[in-house]
Length: 311
Image (cartoon, rainbow, N blue to C red; front, side, top):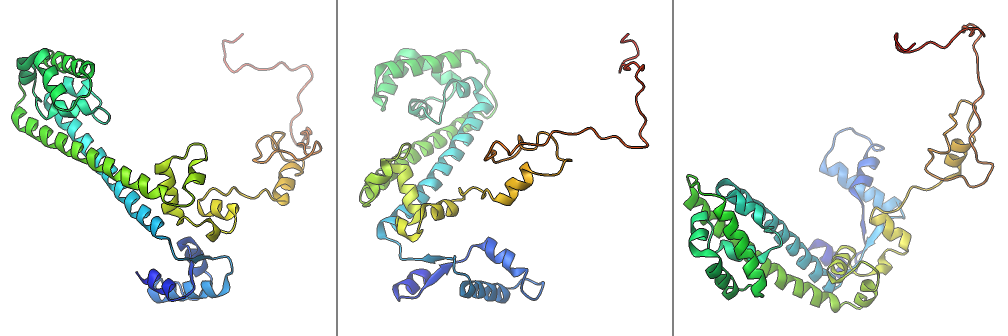
């Protein structure tokens, strides 16, 4: 709210990363940390430095996409937690059914759990009637419904033991299955809103023209960057903000790596991060060195073995 208010009134704002403030605090007087000191350090850094990123007014589309993508991330996390609880609950009383389906991708398995969740109920309804029920409750093809019914009844026939607390656990499974299906519907509606709003951005066609970027990833890109590439100044600046800028290959590092003293090992350049720039950038061959007090090997001595019975 304060940022939007100041920007709308023509005030110039700069973004100071927390890492910058942390390292800069060591050069100021005083060892204690306080809000007053942090405010002074931030203000002083904004006054002296010329490489801070200025804050600009964000477009309405970028703000909408930021809200929508954040909501989608929360719903995806809720869906993952619900599926994990669902599988854990089924595993307590019906492990064969838990192994039979992938509940994170199979909608027919969730439809199955809303009607029949215990081995006795699945054996009682049978394959034929279960197939008809699945087809009438949202399964698109008869083949998919028949395959799911056969898998579920087969799992039920493999278990004849009734676990204590089965009825209560089955009710919890029904509730969790309904919750996952409701989350799937909400995520689908949110995806449609995100894609429609993203297509209204003027750079949507350019962003999606890059390999591997679709509407959803493009919307997240707009939400993270604000949608205005001119705010970064250059592609290198954008890479630095994203944490993708590599370490600079300075001449001092290359010289120290490839032209060191004779004590450097022969594999010095092979282990270097940067390849040699010229054929002369090779590691010096190690020269044998002998100490004056070191014992010398006799020409008639035989090499000793590590194991006593090696001979």
